[in-house]
Length: 501
Ligand SMILES: [Zn+2]
Image 1: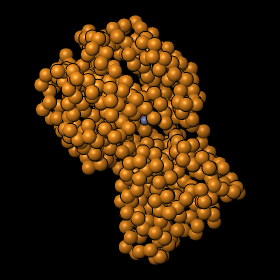
Image 2: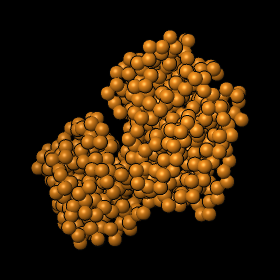
Image 3: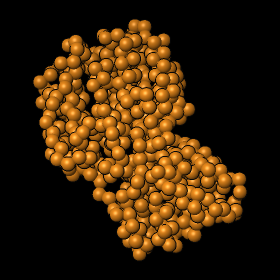
Image 4: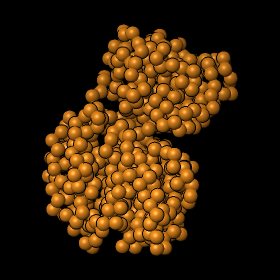
């Protein structure tokens, strides 16, 4: 019986969110709970179990899995504790291992470690030794590092955005590992770094240019040319030393082939990278245009998307509507724990003068003081439309200013569907304007919108990447700098050959 250890650690952060995330923000699973929790989930670990869990010749050993919602960088304490716990769990199960699978996102960042996934993989490698294959899975928003690639044998990467291949990627990781275990495949990984951070609708893999590049990567896998092929675009909000876009191809023992295929993907990507930018609306013109139109209308506030790691406390659109004298019906979610607390204290029907917004990021979102009526209170427990999973937003309230209804939440939760509104008795279909704090949610859950605006406003996840203030990623970088040149340079990682070539 060959033993395969399963572990994971997943979070995506925005370095520009001033609120650090903590150990307590993570869901920690240990031992058999890892498999129990993932059995019914749409996740990479589920997909991995799906392929290898029923094989009579393999024993899958659940060790430890930590995952958290997107947020600000992880505190030093938080990362140290998770690293310690994960490595202890690996150490306890390390005897007679034939392989290790690590489910990662790839865009973590900690205040004391710029490359948490690299540190974790280095730790796992240190425990299991040089001869046990380690296969990982990654989000295409992952920031792959040389340290990660030196300490694993092969990687499977998402092929869809918006992501709908969590389970599928886990299955591909399992088949990749099976090729190593069963057929003696000897993975060679070739990566090419590309100095570009991309955004915008061309990234939708079903319809956009990025999807056509991924189609080629998929064809490489399907034809058997590659064991795995991907183009990662990094998370532009995770300011890290190896942030950028990367072509990553894994072949079986064929270094020349891996180089050529990575080169092909990188060339395709670079040819199109300038088209992969977000088109943003001038905010005051967008408000004026919306005020003159019938609804329902949507404002995509991608700059303050908690699902991308933002703080959620932006009041930018609220402030502009108030300043413009807007009298229509608008719905706006804002993370504001003090306002929610005051509303709960005052009770339904109370009239209050409150400072709204900017409780976490006041530099980007100066609080605005307005008169509101407490219309409704909530406990912040509701079910996401997007995943069927529970949200825990803490105490919430609906505050009405004129006809603007502000849903204040005590904690940032995903705002990538209608759940936050419906849970508070508010229907975006009946409002004139709804603010949606997610880059892609409008096209899935707000299809009734008669016009969607994407204003260029501040936020820790602004698609106007120049606004963010990167200080760590390699420069020059498209689109942060002008005239960025790209000279493909292939790095090869093949553990069975010894050190990186
Ligand atoms: Zn992603």
